[in-house]
Image 1 (cartoon, protein in one colour):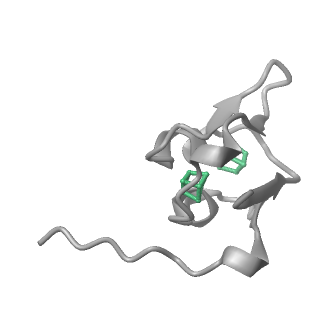
Image 2: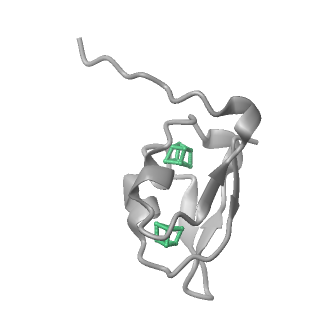
Length: 70
Ligand code: SF4
Ligand code: SF4
């Protein structure tokens, strides 16, 4: 797993909107849930957009992917 846990979420939805591979969802409790961790590309966007720093990315795999648009 790449994205590891969400703790202290306030339910703003920024991580859901920022994730390019649809890993996250707002659950019935109004907070973000990791639904498809196997799809995580380690881009760190969810973590960077989270206003309360609620997202932890697996530290063993925490090298941000550098995307080149050519
Ligand atoms: S690190 Fe990137 S791919 Fe993984 S859950 Fe966060 S936004 Fe989605
Ligand atoms: S960006 Fe942070 S606070 Fe907002 S829904 Fe995602 S985990 Fe929760």
